[in-house]
Image 1 (cartoon, rainbow, N blue to C red):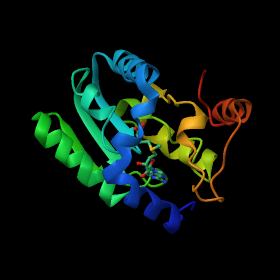
Image 2: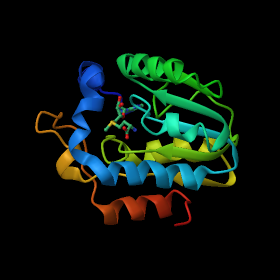
Image 3: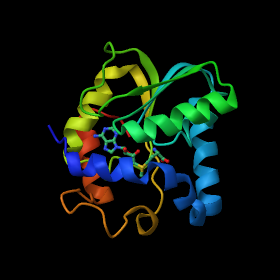
Image 4: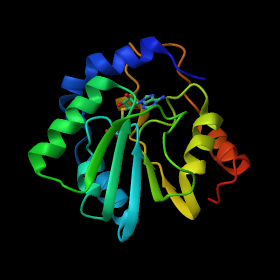
Length: 179
Ligand SMILES: C[S@@+](CC[C@H](N)C(=O)[O-])C[C@H]1O[C@@H](n2cnc3c(N)ncnc32)[C@H](O)[C@@H]1O
């Protein structure tokens, strides 16, 4: 469902250069990371999907007791692992996992973070549904997104969906999220 090998390969190839590619985002990016950490403050268990190199996950470590950071790209997970080890974070775990089939029991996370990814997945409702199942009742999905001009690279696979904000909001409501 929605798995597209060429897109995964795209992220695999980008992994080592990903952090450098974020450079032009500057202050809005730093602000987004801080706001996500604040939203998760005091949570027992947080999962991040599509965590990339761990920009958010490493900051979330100070907000929650346990953080599980996942991504379907093996090369991204390697970067994530390196960053977690270098920072000596003992409460952050990393795992390779596809957003559509998250290998966790239902209803266990107080907060799920999906940063800069939901506009990229081909099957948006299926991704939302998979995330919702892992959330505790009343849990929070935090889904920040940097400006499209920066994150949609021209070489990105044409099969990716660029959802309008209005459609994303509609899908969230249909999938049972309160906005
Ligand atoms: C724009 S990057 C965002 C990374 C990180 N969340 C951030 O904001 O810096 C998109 C990430 O989504 C991941 N991704 C894309 N589709 C995915 C899927 N179906 N399951 C899991 N991860 C996915 C990619 O591997 C990549 O790391």
